[in-house]
Length: 174
View: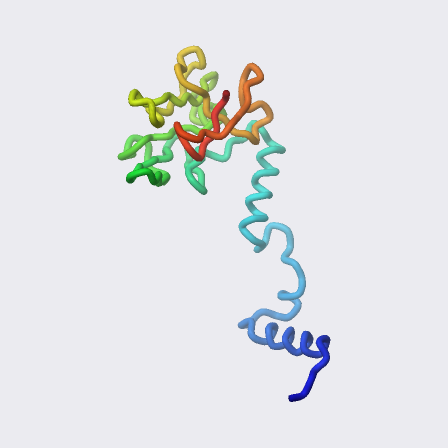
């Protein structure tokens, strides 16, 4: 069996890889895409996170699993099957589970409820979330949901911490 130097093998394999990409010019494959074109979803997530930090007054929507919903026309609808939660965007008023119309104070403002907080209340059985809605902070008997990326996610020096039991996947002021 003939022994090829590693560098020759690399060049041959590179040419095979380039020629196997249907219709793409070799220069397209060997140079990075221009800004804003292509790229991985991780890069676009990082870009959107840095844009949100750069514009703290702008809200990206109601957090809902791995996506976000457009308030006020949509809510995040959490349906529990056993101990497994499924979050999906649903039209406001059409959720068959726990309706989550906000995930931070910014969502309340974006939905036209300025001066309110996104209030999370505990269910009467004490286990999970009883409700989520925008309301005056003085009327909120629970905790405010918050966005850790916001410049000031919580009032009065409180910390924005992950919910472990009441509403997993969300953060609240504690």
